[in-house]
Length: 392
Figure 1: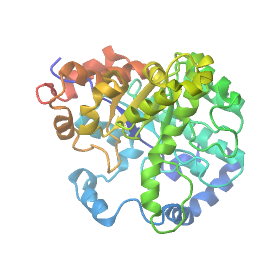
Figure 2 (figure 1 turned 120 degrees about the vertical axis):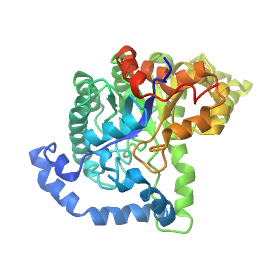
Figure 3 (figure 1 turned 90 degrees about the vertical axis):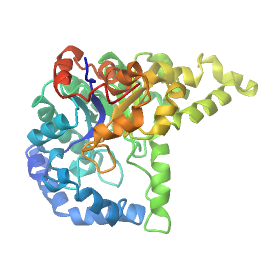
């Protein structure tokens, strides 16, 4: 082929509030209507969380002046037809979909990348997850084989979470699940209560994800935004540390764990530090139940969803593992590569050997998520980025 198979391991989508309402259980619709009506209050509380808007007026202005935004805004976050056209133009044949499409879309009751950001009853968090998953299933079914939806779970009731993973797989939402970064007062992820969840995800080949989005509330105080931006990645890494040390990857060798939109180069010094602690003679007792080094568990179970992969990550690809990196466009977010993916890929991967580019741009993601390569290759031959402009 003279074109790459391009799969984005990090895209975002969500319904508009009116679209979402029909997926809400009738017993929760009145509460949902109140929640939507209070959206201004919710946005104010979000702003208080970091003390300032995440994006400045200049950055937003530059993004909104681009032709693709002027002639459609971010409608692709919920408009399936427009989304397909824009991804085709970007050369993307398949995508992994996380919640959080745009400021106009709805994360029901706040469920999503910021699950447990504020206090509300556990059943309401669960209804937000469940209703979003039902919408996501329909959204993915509109383009069979091209959308791997990542479902939401709450972890107040682990049995309920297990049942939801099974529902997602039965309904062909095959992108796996995203873990809440916070656990709503429950024990963290090294606790045995989560064993049924790791088991079902391993058995059904449903990848477990963390995605940046959650931090503690830093309040409307000096420096809160900078603190938030610095720590948001660390909190998303945190479940990985717990699964390593708890032996979850030793017990579940086929469990795929993907850390998305958290950067990529951080994993190299992190694994070095974890291995150093593991190998210290004074901690030899930890090795009795953990026979392999942390870096070996990353090599067997871990992946990096490297949204808007940068030059530093490309340079460090051998230290990270070429087969551990999966490229993502972050569509339709302003910090991603859309609508300039071709130029970004050429700039970032222009000097990388083509066999490695093939892995990073598509084949690793196809393996992790179970995409049909033969089917997608036919489309890639028509719309994929040309191999002559990317890779050495």
